[in-house]
Image (cartoon, rainbow, N blue to C red; front, top):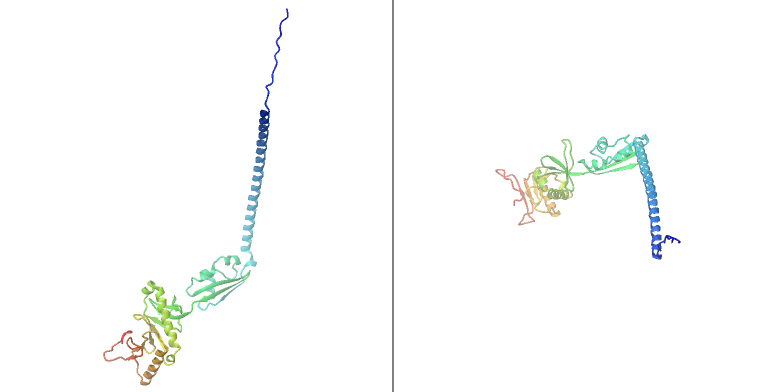
Length: 301
């Protein structure tokens, strides 16, 4: 009797077309990820190498610049050999160089870093300063000074420009040819500098008008008094005060010349001369020291 034999057959599962396609896509994706990781690692290495080279170059450049700058600051052929000063009448050459921080032998680049022009413009006499460089050995310092037009009495005697700018205290041995302006106080000057400048300019306008008139040939102004009056008062060298009563016009100046000539002829000295009154602009009043020493005010009639 025959025994029945059983055979085992291994059946491979069938894979669909869609499954095969998905497998291929997955395999490709895995390869791409692997390649991307490889490329990323290589790119990072290259970037790190490039960064190192850049840092190395910057460091080398910094060392080179620092060495070159140190060499330039110490190079004898970059030292100033000539320093010229122009326009300084009231400041000595040595003082100009000290304030500007330069002298013969100073390195050209060090001298340029001193901001000498700005330092000079802090000096009372200096209105404007400039530094003209002639690389590498020469420097010209050009100074424009304030021009004093008068002296003004405040807490002390100060120099003032034609623009009304009070800029420097007068030293005991300094004199100018301009008039002396009185009647102001230090407190009101500090409280209203713009108004003070306007009053000073008006006083100097008055002085200039007088100097251009015939009256200046027979009388001299020693002082201009500008307190307690809308218009300045001229104080002559003989002590006579001349109140203009408004703008000092040419007709008023002509009258002043005639009055002064008559006083000279009579050999008399007036205490006040009023050119024009509020009620009569053409009127001229001359006052003398009378009995009891009466003094008229600048606005008197």
